[in-house]
Length: 153
Image 1 (tube, rainbow, N blue to C red):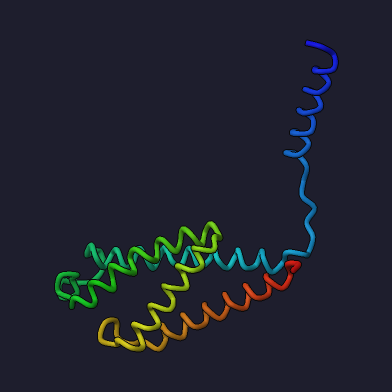
Image 2: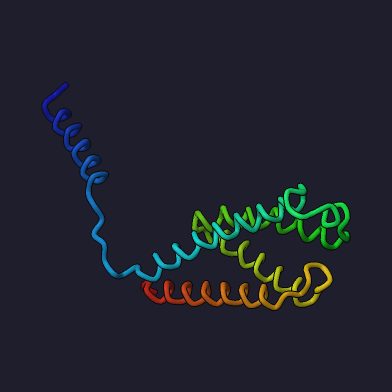
C-alpha cells in the first residue's frame, strides 16, 4: 500500500466521520415545517386510535349484543370496514410525513364529513364530528400554507 493511497483512505474516512458527527445548525428557517410534522404525527396517533376503534367494532370488542357488527346495516358495515383500513393506512403515511399520507388522511376527513352530513343514518349525523374534522382540516391547511411560505420559490 503506497503512502498516497493510505492518505486518500484516511482522508475519506475522516470526511465520512466528519459528515456523520457534525451537528446541524438549527435555525428558525423551518419553524412551520417542524410544526407541520408535529401536527402530522399527532394526527397519525389519532388515526391509529380511530382505525383500531373501527376494528374493535368489526371484531366485537366494543358494543353489546344488539350493537354487534353482524346486526348492523350493510351501509354501516361497509363504512366501518372502510374506515378501519383507511385510517391505519393514513396513520402510517402521516407518521412518515409523506405526501401520500396527507392525501389519504384528507380522504378520510372528507369521507367522514360526507357520511355524517349526507348519510346521517349510517353513523348518526353528528355535527360535533363534522366540526372536529373541519377544525383538523383547517389546522392542516394553515400549517401547510405557512410551511410552504418559508421555503424559497
